[in-house]
Image 1: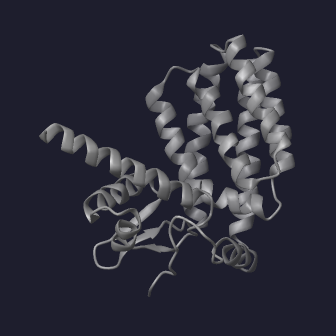
Image 2: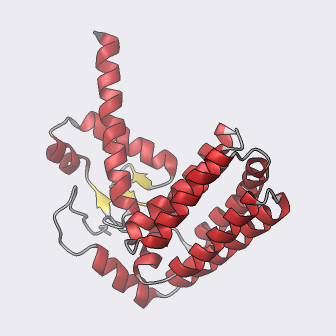
Image 3: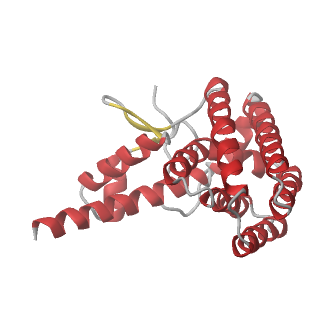
Length: 242
């Protein structure tokens, strides 16, 4: 019974973490938004214990910052933070694509191409961003380095919110689709060097687009206002309190 209770609580906290994470990555809870444990607990009909555990999971991923006195806030990265994310990602993803390119199978290439085709076809920024993560992570899974993939996934999620807002503003999709095609073509040709080069170029261009976007306060404010407009949803984002 005791073990079952722990399992149920763990499952609840993980489910809550998934829901809140999804809201952050969709841009429903913009950087700086405050998330209150009591509000989340009430909405889901649970105690604050699994909510607190869910927040701790999201803090470990870098999506939340928890202040002992003020509560939990969606992480708002600075340009320096974003630069560091992409510097680390370039090193790790370069290694991942190198290993993956040596181990790709025809079946996996078919899955990756299907994801790419879905990305090209969609006009929904949220759907595109989800497909984008699946595209890259499915490739990296071929590297057979689960810890490496886990670190890359966490870094991608930490910078995903700004990328989605950048997409919502009409930036990056077409260029990124072409870059993904270059990566896929290199993998299909079993050209490791070209796959690494295309991946590095893709990361650098994405970084430039995101850093330009967050460096424009007026554009950032406009997009934040759009994604934070009242709408039916999981949680109601609250502005950060000073």
